[in-house]
Length: 63
Image (cartoon, rainbow, N blue to C red):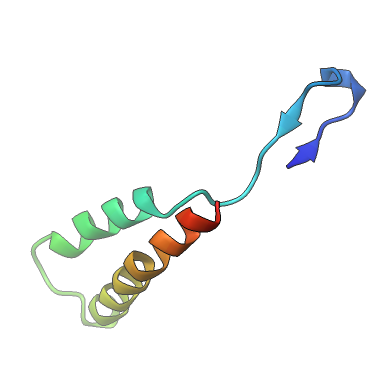
């Protein structure tokens, strides 16, 4: 967390970072499920989806 200076008051804080990949996973699952084939992308998208699903619980635990 980063404390924001006096312009926003003494109790103003800004939290930044990635909380989790839930939204990215949801959107990627939708994209992968679409009909059609894109050979240049399909294998990479499947690997990315698997990796995000594997890393997501750890990221949530660290948060």
